[in-house]
Picture 1: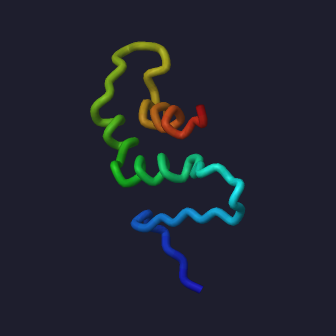
Picture 2: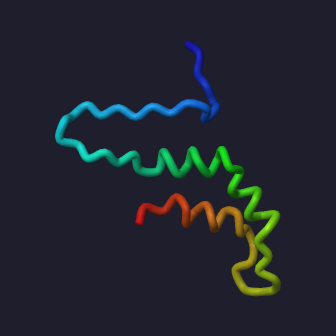
Length: 68
């Protein structure tokens, strides 16, 4: 069996007519990975000497992936 570890294709299927069309984290995670969001934030966002300045890419990804 072959598996793919790329995010080039995405399919969402619903097996119940009463389900709400909500893909959850799948779509934001795919988009963030394609855009290279974590690396972009690490390169561009500088919090200076402020507390909590470490790992800004991970912190932004946490906000993107949070289900609010």
